[in-house]
Length: 450
Image 1 (tube, rainbow, N blue to C red):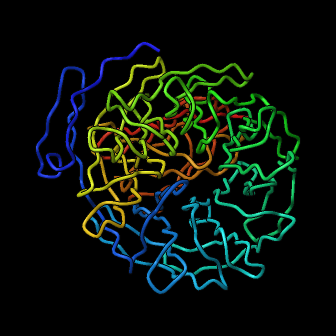
Image 2: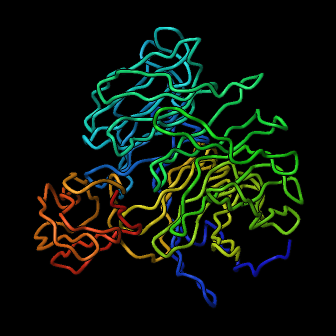
Image 3: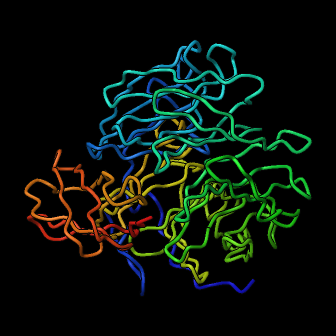
């Protein structure tokens, strides 16, 4: 594959000192080491961990390991303050690899890989204050899960284990939907509900070449295999991202021209193309275990678990057309080995976790300011006229209007960072705009009226 221009590498140390650098066509960049995991607050957050933005604007996540406990749920404020909300004790779960997802009741859901009644993990719900409820204990028939469930527009959560797909209601009613078993445990990452209402996901094994496959699933559990990964691009992938163009984007941690992973684009019909081959010899990173986030500038951002000039991984940017740029080299002092899919906070900044590095070499939580536009996040991003939609953002106090693609909606401001709006009659698919005293904020993705 033809190499694209690469931005000048910026060391984490230089960025942490507040040195802002830029090159032609690049964003100004400021890296902040928000949290150094110390064991007491958990440590070694690895894939597929992902943090969630709460209604209060804080970040919530899990760490699978902890001194004296079986993992933690933590809250991280944007100024770097951290609080452990829950220590797992094996009876209520162990090794929470999944991270958290925000539900429309304001609480968070996650899974543990081990522990619980059968020792095979749990699905749990936790409030922002730290009150944890075990919703379900996985059984041998279900399989174990590292993946996050996702809340669909029907209000239920849909997820996968290493062998099955399931749904679970907010109150804990569990239904097994489909088997993902194909001769051996295939494993699966978090599902994505696409704009067509179906769910899309990938597995890390199974399929025609036993290298994994991408599938589509209806809410009733009917599965269609869209693409079988082959030995040249094994599907050791994290959660897919659906872009504004309707296609899916993701990474594999292996395969490609250099066997170090690729960034790929896949259409809903199953046509796949490689956008970038990771080449460790060029120091552009390797083994991208984590997934991608499409940010408010329309480009994708991701991380690699290794490679780069210091072999601790990189933060990269890639356009839908394949133009690839390295934004930052991780180093062991400020963070190393990121395996967590980064998220974009509604303030425009990118946040994520590394598995090692930092003061105690136990991982860090970081923020990366690229000067990207602030926006409004929608929960959910598809629905019908009359549905109540949650909006996350900032500066909502004093909001004067909310509109769905230009159609005025009724709304209620709940806090400076959270409001509710009702999809108005006559609304059509398009951007949601919130007019605040500081100006207008728009959603970075359209709301799809079904």
